[in-house]
Every structure is written in structure tokens, then in C-alpha cells.
Length: 257
Ligand SMILES: [Zn+2]
Image (cartoon, rainbow, N blue to C red; front, side, top):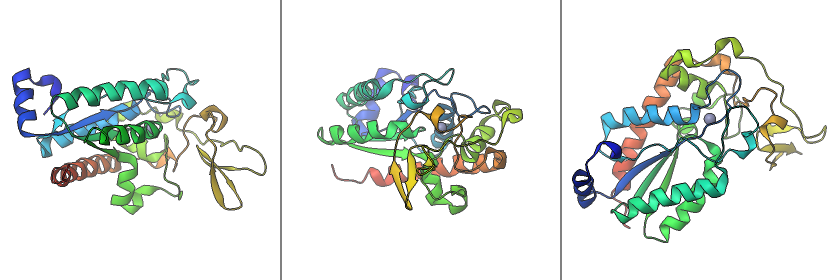
């Protein structure tokens, strides 16, 4: 059920009987030379198309921008930064709260939004609400271990996983001629790359957020090479994410607030 398609009496009827809303957010940012800038928005939107078949939960319009300052120098990338992302999301959630929403399911397509969503979680709890983050690309690693790729860390950007999900939406969105190997840039000889936001020293991952242009010459980072992506895999991940979210919402509805 899409909020933008309802009349206000129908929205009122929903909130009279329900207090759960899905609020999706993505990003407009570089994902390597081979993927579209709207990757982080398109994938949640596809998951929502599937979710609509499985759940009658109310779905708010997707926010197509997010916090991505570290990618901002790649052409076409536009970041709201953390403060504006927070304000946009706060106003959306608080606006929905005033109509009766108390359980917010954030379907998120972009890791840079997580610090903002953490802060919103606390602020919404102070208003007797609950906010859960559905980070689809991380969730699916726990659903099927093979989907995690060949690196142990829990982040990814423009690798096989996201490439597969976009292929499932529309294969023509992937510029296969531009799928290339990349060279990751170390911070120094002693402080090699570990993830796009970490260096490794003596076996320990230390967070060091750098501009992505200083990490990857291409704009994709991993976890695995986009050449391994298939549309079939992408379709399975999208379907699994939608099913998981539909089930989670039923359990979330039973939480006492
Ligand atoms: Zn992404």
C-alpha cells in the first residue's frame, strides 16, 4: 500500500488501525564505472515492489538522496550530508508520527545513511516509537552465507552483490564493458586497505573513513568482483529481502511500545 496513492480518508483509516510504516531511503552516488548512480535507490524500490505482494503495510515514498560525502567528487554523485539527511528523515518520520505511526521500518540501500539512522532510532524512541533498519545488502548475508562474497568484512560497494541486484531489475543498466579490475589504494605501506572505511594494522581493522577516490581508482570496492554477478542471484536476493521484511513486520507489530 503506497502512501502517495491513498486519499487522506484512506490514510486516516490505515492509521486508525495500524501504526507501522516502511520508509525507504537510498542515495545518488557512484558505484564504479559499470553501475548506475541510482543503484542504492533502485534496489530498495524493487524490494518494495515485491513486498507489496506479500504485505499490506503502508509504504512511504523513497528518499532518493542520502549521506555520501566521501563519494561526492565522482561525477553525478549528490550528497545531502549527515545533517540534512537527518533533518529530511526526521521531518518525514515525525510527520508520519503525528498521524499515528509508531513503528518505522527503514528500508535502506546505502551504508552511509546508517549513522544518521542510528541517531534517529534514539530520537524516535524518545517519542515512544521504534525504528528498525533493514539494510538489505547486509541482511542477505545472514540469510544465505554464500551471498557474503569472499571477504570477511561486513560492508560492500559496487561489487557483485549490488551488480547482481541491478541486473535483476534491468540488465541494460549495467555497462558490462566497464566492469574492470580495480586497484585499492593503501593509506601507507604499513596501513593497507581493509574496507572502504578501514585500514588493517597487526590483524585489527581500524576505522579510517577516507574519500572513496583515495581508496578505489574505479569507484567500486567489493566485497567481491562484479564480474561474478548474475541476474538470477540478484532476483533471489531481492525476493529473499522482501520475504524477510514481510515476516519481520508481523513480528514487529506484536512488540509492546
Ligand atoms: Zn550501494
